[in-house]
Length: 634
Image (cartoon, rainbow, N blue to C red; front, top):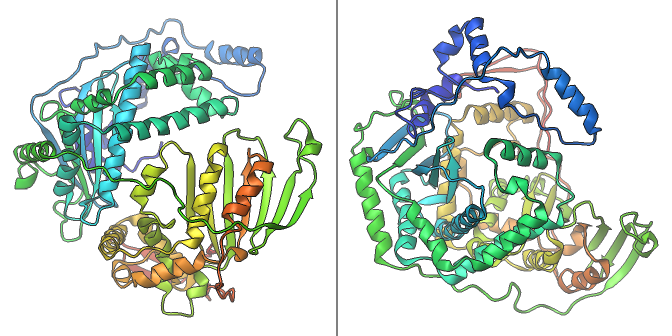
């Protein structure tokens, strides 16, 4: 483990002790205090080892392709030298350290990239050793999924005070468990964002979830279970190591079940779980009793007295326990005042589909060794469609529930070098992701994809454009529908949303300027590429000058002509069923214009002499000549 104690100790030391403040290990980080680590002697370390690291409390897990008897003998031999006289230390009694008051921690971290608020509702740890425990765990997972959908939709609103938010269950110690709400706040709106997110939990406490919200979350969970079942014999060794470790440490029920039994039991329990049961889980978020609020924000220059310090409570009127307790009360009242207004989702991704095209050329190459009758299925199938698109198909059962998708074309950001829109081109993908590259708002598409395992992402690199991702074989038609929408849809420019995205990008750029690693990387790229914008992060000023309309136009042009792209599908698909779908969704894409590609070289000029740059903490640099060489990569 490598820990930067200088930065970690002041930023996290105060937070680490809040959940268990009255214990003797508090206040300090779990790794210890810097002064103790620097001055400890060997005898003390050996005594600690002899007391706590005893073989009777250890388990050795070995998973892999080996002869079990040989491994058992090797393990026995390795531990046979332990002295039998050494006795393990007695475990202390586990106690739940409850408290009646709201606890608060506010820190400023010079390396933080965003402002984050955490509501932590502490409770006694729950076990997972019976079927009833498994049912309770499934109910809680449904709650996290359903509230996550709400928070995601709220975060995408033009007036949202937070960039993202989610809930989770965390285990602090053997006896302490907490239900967390994590909010990534917009600059200067951390308290507003916390109040807004807490209000949604309170809304569920008073009014519950809708049946459709729970149904959609169940569908997603069932899809995950189906993947586990389909790939039960294709898990990595690390998965089985984790299972056995959980069995040793907590006697976890699931660690003792076969995958088939777990999936079958989980499906039966999910059928029995009702909407009201999921809504009741919101009441596990209780305040102010056993509740903590932790706020971390980037430090700004000019705030040296506060930088990397745990701010004393009461130094800011709005972050005292009393003020934050009032904030929680306002959030509760706001949630109780009105019900959630669900958004009506489109019934289908594509309403009007053009007539399908046809396959012009088909080439079958080799035979496929992954099937029972290799002669019946080619190793690779290459297609050329009537609209000029080129497709390569490779069937494999490396993973039973997986199809990899990649759609690539030459020409990327370097094509914008000769125009004044390079900055706009660099941010095209970011804006598209926020507006919806498939012609559907991201929050709406997120809910429409409930129960489907489809992930597709766009990239615009220096010399190429790529759409890549994966899907379940059962959802390959949905994936092809999204590919179709990417090419036929234009980004819907919403000025309110554009301003929100610009604000978030500007805040991110400002925070990067205070991150030492980003400052170092940008300086290295500046030296190695003569300051090329293609290989460094934008400054806040540059972000604010981006023409968002030009960014959207560049993205639309990048994904317009299917004839420029090479479509690749690799996975466990049925070839005869896939071919008509390709004609239906890919060959129905028509484009009259193509992006003019000159394959412009990037404006990268390597240093003509060796250069050394010594960075200071404020990001400024002194340049000296010294032997040094670096090469930029795409």
